[in-house]
Length: 213
Image (cartoon, rainbow, N blue to C red):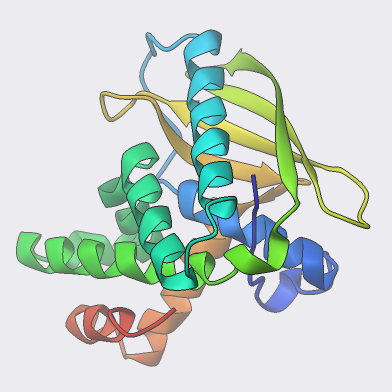
């Protein structure tokens, strides 16, 4: 699986450029408002199977030979399929989501979905040949952690841990930990900064997200 991340501010010194790009590609799958708070019927095998499916689908896109625009569209479909997009978008918006109307949240969520697809999908071509290997899964409190190892050409392997729950009714990613760094928190910081620059105007943020990425 190919991963990329445009790291921001305090994280820019942590990863080398290629590794930073690789990591962020997956951050689209890694966001949620909070840890699951209720008991889960999900088991380790189901959590691992979800990660296996994401890896499989992303690898197919990378190997497809399609144009970049087509790959971005495929990536958006994968994002919608395996991620709880409304929860992810609301998490990125943070506390400001509580003051948004239902209509505003719907529009923002759709714009956020396209923004994430463009932002990270553009990096597909840079990391052909990279991969991620799924290792094992274990239950941690009310969620499951799927341990994987990511590989880049010319780089040392590094840990990527997927946190999975069925809080929304189906198995979905709610965070991913890259060498100890939560991508959920990274993306929340970035969207929060974008909203601050627009003086808290959610409608303006939504319009700008339609063109961003």
